[in-house]
Length: 372
Ligand SMILES: [Zn+2]
Figure 1 (cartoon, protein in one colour):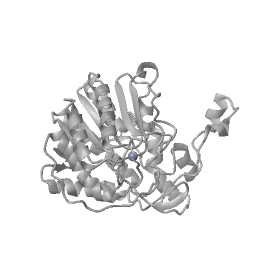
Figure 2 (cartoon, protein in one colour):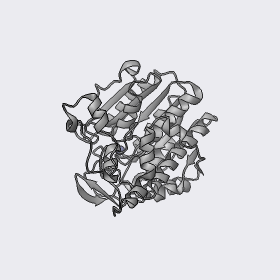
Figure 3 (cartoon, protein in one colour):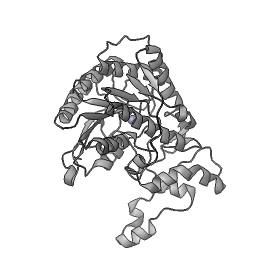
Figure 4 (cartoon, helix red, strand yellow):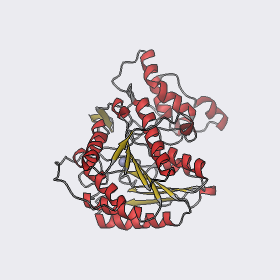
């Protein structure tokens, strides 16, 4: 299987994030992607290829151009405003209650993009969990190119290609970045597939967290089915979306399927949810599935609460491939660094129908509690 990878992600060099306002060592770090890359290289069965540039067009097909401009200029604006920070993170958001009682006309006049860099970060930001540094925009652009190059290879006939995207994307909505995500790589790929083929596209999101951004982007769309298995938002980030009664509206009614699961979800429970998700995708007419692949469902993940083991990823990959659709597989979360490479190798070998040959366990981390 081809693996699309770009070293540009290294510029998104994050060392600190905040959890409920408290600084903690970052979870979404460059080592994650490097661990996966080196493990897949050692396997010998994967071919690492660089992305090709696709420009801004596919991004603004999904995202507000204003948000793209903000992300592009945020770091230099911070410097221009003489705001000295090691990273940019918002602290003030335009909560709708701030404008309560004002007319729609007043709100659209007053709730405009601020001038202050911190205000702009809040205007376009979902939360404080996406710290932005000097290299973030280049890295986020390259993650999109990784996704679109994986898509190109699948459109050219490959049965499955893995895009090692970093930063991840599924929390980014049309006009919103956050949750470690800047551009929604999976949504951008799905939109580009539709424009290239005219087919219906399904997104299978198996990251531990609900992909609120993917849901929002395609909420009213009849040509995209978004199916997500994730932690119940009553127990975990992103808290406000991800419940089973969110089914899409208008032309998109019935095209959104959320399968929230309890903390402590086991392999067996997760596989049952996987079968349900795959049944919903099997009903659709398209020939390509975009997979938002996360490993924060792993039992030792520092920010997850599920109990999945490496061998079950092989089985989930196998069952996903048994749909008989071509797969654009894009990396989202997963924060237990010692296991990430093996978990990815297991999943992708499952897709290929190759047996999994477990390597010795690489160590164990400690659990923490963080959003992302
Ligand atoms: Zn996640």
